Image 1 (tube, rainbow, N blue to C red):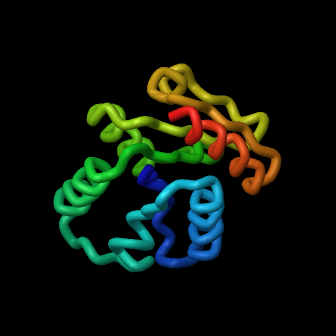
Image 2: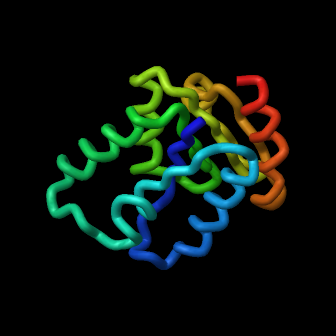
Length: 132
């Protein structure tokens, strides 16, 4: 199952964080895809925001599901989650324990996984994948 991993664009400053999250996703058994890594190569490559979002939509359409971390306030990532929902894709929400998850997010989520440390997501992701 191809999983679109959302991430915040920080001009490569969060490359290790993204690589780690994608590695966890792979360890859970998914084929990982991250727009910032796989399309933009951690750089700004789109000058036209509409073309950026169209390409994101195209990539979400090619994916089976989307993973979004709701621990910090996601803006662009939330737009991607909305696109995935509109395309009837599965949406996997992860969040650090204690994060308040809004009902709107719960309403589009197929699963909500809480973690103390990010590595804690592997087992529940694997379990979810096995059932789907």
